[in-house]
Length: 193
Image (cartoon, rainbow, N blue to C red; front, side):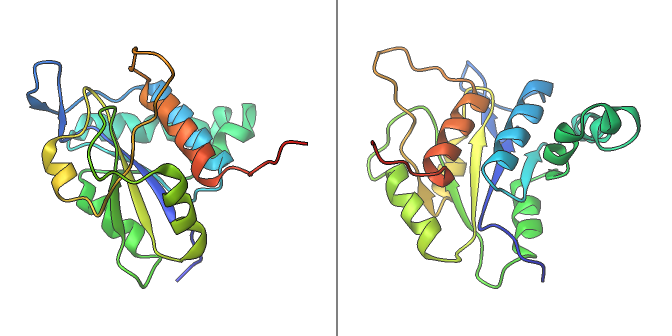
């Protein structure tokens, strides 16, 4: 078993809600794939999963990563190549969990979050300590569209508090939320000098 960081992100395109609160499969975006891969690599993650049941969307994700992993794209931007090397494309959350589990003895725990506050959610600072103090593997699910379904929250081992701004507007892109969370969970802690 090769060593692996105990945190991975899964960008979930199904099951998620649309704006009518219907369960749908959302479309992959090139920006989410690139930016979350780059943030994940920057903050030391070994895996970033893109989860979609759509065959065409999985092929597109593989083509996007492939462009930067070999040939002209790899030569043109080796930094992008390193980031996209950690991308894994899977049809379900279960298949992402199984892949990540291959690197650990302890069972992978699912962590979910969303834009809405939920009672009993765990603070990011508390989760950071868990990550630092144990080798327990965690797969952090981030929803696309209008967020993860209630089914995802019901099956989670841990629900994280949402990222909150200082105003009433609350609509971060998933790639921005991922970057903020990764900084708070695995970034270097600095003291004021």
